[in-house]
Image (cartoon, rainbow, N blue to C red):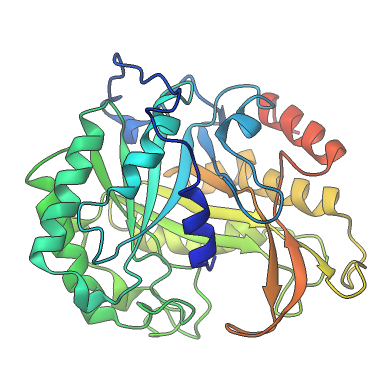
Length: 355
């Protein structure tokens, strides 16, 4: 999912620790199980997390807004951070830290680290500063899944479609982190495959695989969009299983790695000009609940036992007709803090048995 600079900057509006947030001092990392707390939100053996909207322009939300509706605290909190020359020490993370520390259940902090100024700017010095910062976060009792240069197999980010340079920088960061801490897991997370072949530069996987020795978790960004036309249609039967199993066979069991969905969700699309739903006929409620059920079904877990977690993209966004076009549609991904009936039924599903 393309994240704009506006999204990242808006998080800076979060209050500082010195402004009334009490920092817990008794947090401890959960060793083993990828740092996941087994008492946080799980369904059918799969941990469930969210990527909150923080202070998005449209319908902002934060960890608490989601958590207080859930049957158990979210297991993972997703975040996005720009890697920029003016902030080599990643001090922006200092602003976010109190909110992670004050989240119940000590969730994993899944940090997408965006090399916005280019992969060539990631030098050994930068890698070392990243490693120091991750070790500092881990010292506060927080496990990190570091998702560097995610969706690198797409063309919507400036670091995309550069497989050799990506692998070089990935390994540089991995080795720097491992020299300092074991509480940070390297999360390799391409976009779900959309190229003609597994080794395609655009939309493939294999050219971007840095090797099993430098990856701790294999992840995907995988959404139900209703095709290129963004139709409001139900996921077809087996839609999630087909793609996730293909990926897991290659980079889960195929490489001895756990698999997660680093970003997922299902879009409900409306026109910005008319406010009317896009064609397709399925409701917001039915689209999202069907996708959630596919992801957390016993069938998927049975076929992909290495699936450990999913993180839902809890945002609503105005989208454009191209990478730099004018916004023409609204895509609502929210599962919990949007439509009331959907939220109610999703929470019941997350807290209940399979059906």
